[in-house]
Image (cartoon, rainbow, N blue to C red; front, side, top):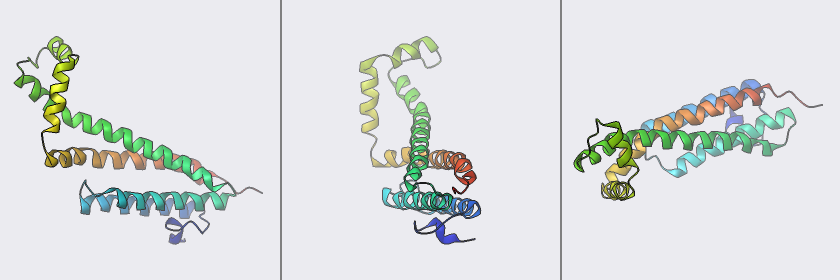
Length: 172
C-alpha cells in the first residue's frame, strides 16, 4: 500500500490505497479538532481539503477518469459539513432562545405562545441583538457545538461517495 497517495496528487491510488488514505486523512482531521479545538482555523481545514482532493485525483487517475471528478466528492462532503454544522449550531441555540423568551415574559411551556413569539419580527431582532452582544467567547462556544457534528457530516458524506470512487474500474 502506498500512503503517499493521500497527500500528493501525482500518484495512482487503487481501491485499497484509497480507503487507507481516507482513513488517514479522517484521523488527521479528528486530531486537528481534538488538539486545536473547535476554532482550529480555516488554514488547517484547507490543508485537509487539499489532501482529500489529492487522494480523489489519484483514485481517478488509477481508474482512467478525469481528475476534475474529484470536485464532486469535495463539493458533496463540504455541503454536508456546512449543513450539519448549521443544524448543530441551531440546536445548540435552542436553550438560549428559550432563556431569551422567558426573559421577555413568554411562557415557554405554551406551544402557541412559542409559535407566536418565533414569528414576531421585533422579538427575533431582539434575540439577534442579544446573540451579537454575547462576545467572542460565545462565538467559540457556538463553533464548538458545530465542530464534531460537522466533522462527522463531512466524513460520512465522504465515505458514501467513497463507495462509488472505490468501485471505479480501470478504463481500457
